[in-house]
Image (cartoon, rainbow, N blue to C red; front, side):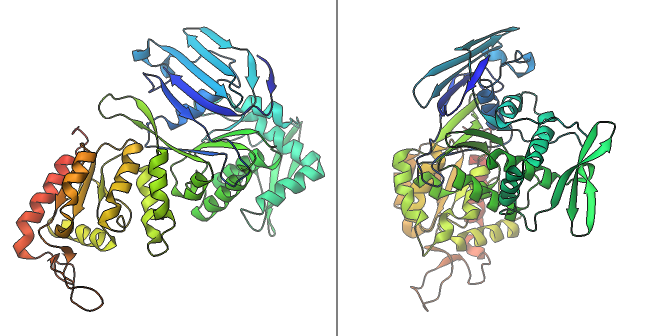
Length: 465
């Protein structure tokens, strides 16, 4: 291909025929707007849903050196891969491959830096150096998912060669891990070099590097000398990183995405941030459709996000969309919505009492009240969840018909009492529950509750449609 074009950001991608994408699916990307998080595109989804495939499909437009192996081409699409990319200035690119024939139009390479999930480099290497553009070209050759990134050691050489580069790199590294290890490139002899690291009075070579530190070096390298309008692709940035470090790395992503386009696929709630969406970032879910058994792309709709913003700013119930709730975004499917945190605790206890293994997961610590059920249900439906159950207290039974009309695939269950747990008249109005004040299920309600939970299990069966 011809030399790459810098500053060319991505507007949308249509992928067809690559891995699970038997039919065309289109993803739109966030464009940096000067606000933290504005240029972040976060791709969620279950294992084998197609997240990494999106990163791979994008990389095709940066380097098309070899045809795509047949094993990665979808048989239902005739073993033909057809991907189409639109850049921020509405320029259109296409990449098609069938057999050993590959066609890229136009032949201009789009500059991107791609960081695969398996981040590794040879512990011994030569003293070659490489700049960001040459490294970016090599980094996008990630079809296959088990690369040893030879050129990364060249980047380490290039960083050490220039004192300003070394200071910039270490300064950014210090914002994630403290103290920063004392690292440098050492000569082993015979034209062989290695990375030497010091922690206090202890030193070891690059063969002893922990996976977390290796991963962090790759991520910092992708950022430290990046420029405005650069495109950075990352598959699973969280791998091998302690949760505290994940949060700090995300802080860097959020900051850098004000001027750069950062696209990553993740399994970690520490890399999801509602503020970023408010400032222009995008949150998407790639999943396998339970009916058609193919990869699909879904996104929270604008009108849904408008309704959700009241929940993100709810200072009385900040947990509604907190860390536990964000964990629900990483479920394969099968989500149970209940009114509040008391419900989550009590229903888990009831299931244990009745020896019933519930075939789903409760959404966070509840939705913060029955009136929030439609908002959360709409968010999950937008993101492609197909198996959702709701449990309401009896005093909110009027919502049942409304919810089942708005969400035909969703089933709503109503308990026979106005609260999940007995509540004495102290700080709030007294109410009868299906459990006593300690959360123990009352015998009078045992059969009704057992029947409800078994019905929920039937509804959440992944074979149900």
